[in-house]
Length: 560
Image 1: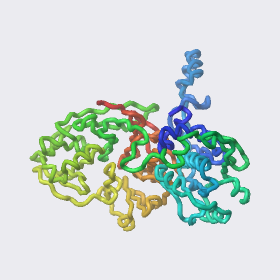
Image 2 (image 1 turned 135 degrees about the vertical axis):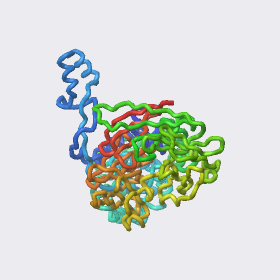
Image 3 (image 1 turned 180 degrees about the vertical axis):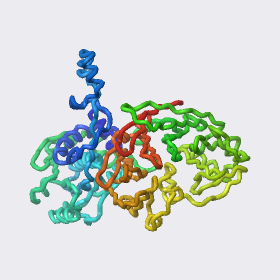
Image 4 (image 1 turned 30 degrees about the vertical axis):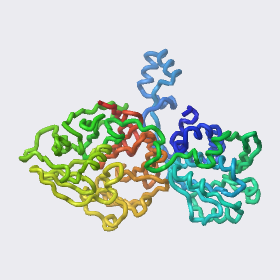
């Protein structure tokens, strides 16, 4: 990806590399035009303390050690200043609550066929990227369709649906009025249409029109784009690539057979690309190593340093593939497959109860296919209750006694068993208090540290805090709720948007984009009771920090 398109990598992953490069100049010019009318934020928000260190800032934000350097070694201070090596305290801001959706009302009639569709494609990419940064979503309405019929989803789903929306007749001003009447008050609507229809409408902001102005031997080469009263002539992708783009042949396929948009680097200690996990309430992060018989564990210090510290994982060589692990007290316990049986590995004082906990995998519901699937996912939690071991396997809780007896301990909670990992936040049996009646009946459930949250649609949540307070949290973008954390008395939902790989903290008074933990190939890991988060930002590198403030406290490198 060229340097100029590097910030677009997440958005352009819905296209083939060839089309992404061909659209690059058109995207950058449109983005500069749209940006004047569609800022990614209404402002920086209200100041909220300090969020780390940076290489730029005001003189009063310089670290005291830098001023000491200026006094003792002024020449070195000037060199570092010239080379932008000085360190400044970086202020943090709280982003106001999301303002509403970004809506694109598209003209799918004959007047926008051909070059007009290419301009619309570029405009949708620009609007989608800006909506993601704002913490909201892009929805598309086709003029002439019923007002409540919206095209939504990630770009891999949205673009093919938009491409199939061609209509045999051009829309009318009445179609535009009906579409605008269906908008919410906080929505920011863009109209993508032809100059002919725009001329018949009252003057309104955020209207984008395009018209072909130059032709070559292979077809249209330039268009004039008019946004409100600002006009610019832009070059179109040339030749066969433009034709293939209008037919959808340059869109990446979605679904299980689709190639990955970006090569996924192997995460720290993660066979198959699975991220490390907090499997118990201890401050220990566990993962498999480069091979399935290696267990990596790292304790997260409960200290606060000015600079992020580098942690090193402890490596445990087992006698077979490790299926589940967790720290219980001072013991690190893992369940490994050895010589056709599941047996525990214990780092620390052995169990006092007689027996070796040896069990047949079939008794736990583990056949060859299920075991192979588990070894590509994060480690399962391994708990100890009384003298038994407890773990979730294949949708059921299994209790393993010291003599090897396995009993079924009930089903896993609805939503706890996701395709990618086991989600402790959604398992009701791990909530130590009595559930609210509405929470017990709700379609979606979360809990953490004595606080419970529930929702029917996954976007509007009711939260009953551990202190007895009720909160209402909501968001608009297409995102998955990973878990729940606390900022003193206030709860916050942690959401993950896989399409744009963005992590956010949603509170009652605002939304914070956790940019330092965003952009990785896999979703981050959250601690079940503490505001700790671990996310991959580069191959073999994990950043660990505060899920409330977004501050990075530790780095973790591979120890393979």
